[in-house]
Length: 227
Image 1 (cartoon, rainbow, N blue to C red):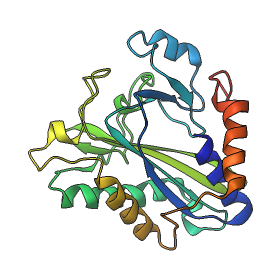
Image 2 (cartoon, one colour; image 1 turned 120 degrees about the vertical axis):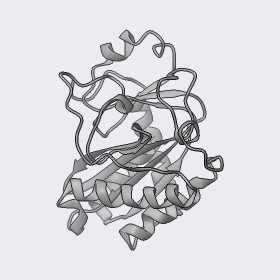
Image 3 (cartoon, rainbow, N blue to C red; image 1 turned 90 degrees about the vertical axis):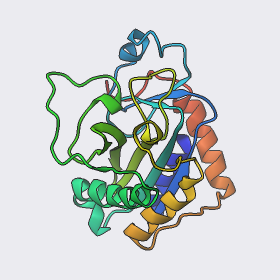
């Protein structure tokens, strides 16, 4: 999460345009920027898992048996002006990869209205969600700073034993099994769809130092952000 904030800082100051696709070392919960830590502590089945707060908004994500992507675009990029357009373009790129793998997925198309927002992102329903057999398998959220944008998203590959009610594409499709190896193709598809975006990014020393600083000052705790 600190690394992604470094990317956003570089987008706002140096015009960086970049995409990352990655996995987590262990099952981890990321809270949306606006979520209250008490909500996480109340989720007894998840409360003992490692947790971190994201810079982007939205509901909590259980990062387990999934792929995470992040992208940054600078101020002045035409896609930054309309956040919903950016969601749509990126999700169309992801849809193309899933369909090429034989997964019958589609954009939800219509928001699912609920009396109150559930804790977990994948139990919420936005019109730009990617769904398979009626289940959400891709969701995204954004954060803006000085005109630049950071967008996070998650693709569920398999249901986690920590949240078995949230199936992934392999649980919902009869296609050949989708593995984490699809991550490179996913990143390439997003970069191609956006155009002129760095996919393979070599981290200079100043980024490593800044990420470590942010990790210590902010991301090592949950008690920050607007709640």
